[in-house]
Amino acid sequence: MSEQILIADALAEITTIGKRLEKKQQSIVAYVARDERIRDPLEKTGGSTQFIASERQSHADLTNRIIALRRAVAAANTATLLNLNGVEMSLADWLVWKREVYPLRKTLLDGLLRQVNVTRGEAKKRNVQLVGPNQQVQNEGDIMVHLDEQALNQEIEALEELFGKLDGALSVKNATTSVLL
Image 1 (cartoon, rainbow, N blue to C red):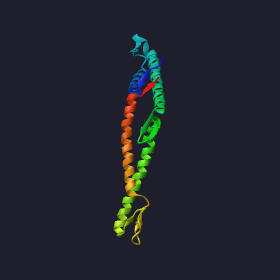
Image 2: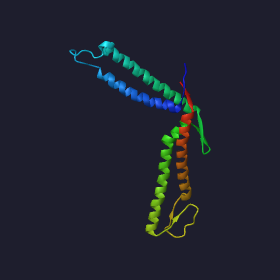
Image 3: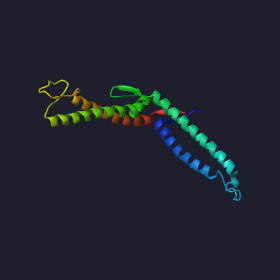
Image 4: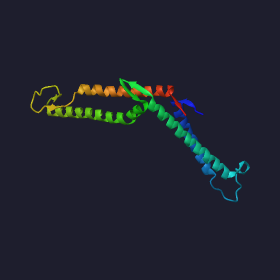
């Protein structure tokens, strides 16, 4: 029997299951051993041994549910396309972009901008000009910058805008895309 739920609900259920698993682990551990002189506190309901076996089975069932939910979310993320700023990729690819590509790209662009600013400070100290890629050197000792600073700033702004749009778009997709379990 298959079940259909939204990605957002599947992700919320995974979080809830995680909390339930923590409580189950605590309750199982609490009954692992006891002094034989103390009466089994679970004797009326089948005993500690049966309780532990039942809770361990429940624990296994919940972990299997997490696997099923993650598999369904992954399948939906792979099959669902999202177009942002003219770039179309699957949700799975956008998630990789968000986690891995964006930070690398941001680090590179921020590093380039930082280096231009350091170089600008150096030029000021030396009382020379910073010369861009499409400019002519006016004085001996001027410092050449091999990238368009204005274009770099625009690229940084576009990257930040895309990142912001992506967060919103992923939230909408999670709230509107169903997964099949």
